[in-house]
Image (cartoon, rainbow, N blue to C red; front, side):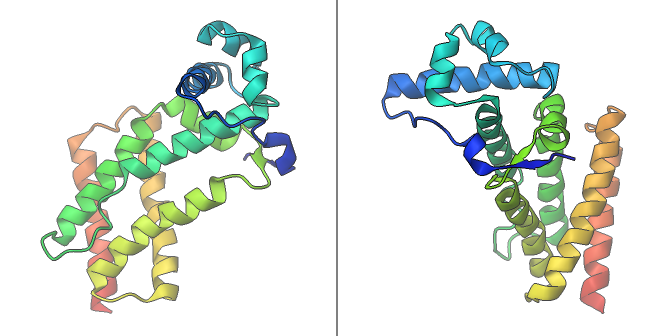
Length: 209
């Protein structure tokens, strides 16, 4: 489990304002993500990042005061990609059936875990969390996706119950998906169908109570 560190250790030194500067930062972050995924946090260095990205170490420190600040930017972008992958299932509208909402959610979760699994694991388990890390905000928004599907299935929102149900459902789905990822089964149609059935059965059971 990642540990927390003081936020000032992970602050960005300089925000890129010009297009060229933003391109340089993108290059640095993309190179750093490759190094971090391959080496893990303990062996992650700005020197190797500079070599992979074709930039100077000085250029890295122009924007990031240390490797933790760089890892935090990687984390932010990765979590944004995860949220983007699972967007849509929470949208309101009578046109979507429960099965369609469940399928959209599950497909998003699977797609999110297919986005660089090694990097996902390192960011989750190894990189320390800054005191003002985006992790808490991400977890709240991630849970909201589940809660919205739960509320739509019930026909009305119950904030307290939906929050608990969201944690139960997300924990169950994450457990199955993580296990599938370890066994190389994320793309299994049979597994997808079973997870969707699990979600639908749970939500129908709640609605009937």
